Image (cartoon, rainbow, N blue to C red; front, side, top):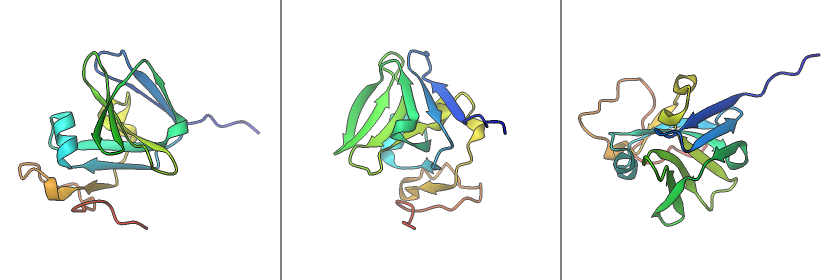
Length: 139
């Protein structure tokens, strides 16, 4: 019986000073349209993929900013790339990785759009994915 290789996603900031690897498949991936993601990315939305915190290893030193109480957004201190989002009190502990920083972002399949109440009107939703005005409904 042969062992199967574990899935690993890798990525980096624009300048390469901060690299990371995420082991296993993400538990979720979505497009976020909230105004904080718009400001952090400079784009109309930001696509995130979620992993258990213990599955992600960061190589290099990311800076962090508390964008709202208990929420940290991490970035590269050298080039400013948005990298991670984390709610500190979330159990189980998870971390969201900005999908555009993955080395192979097309391996992801975002499932939905969230916070579309803040969506820019010049960014049409034409991919057929579910869209939620705020958070995705709890199962």
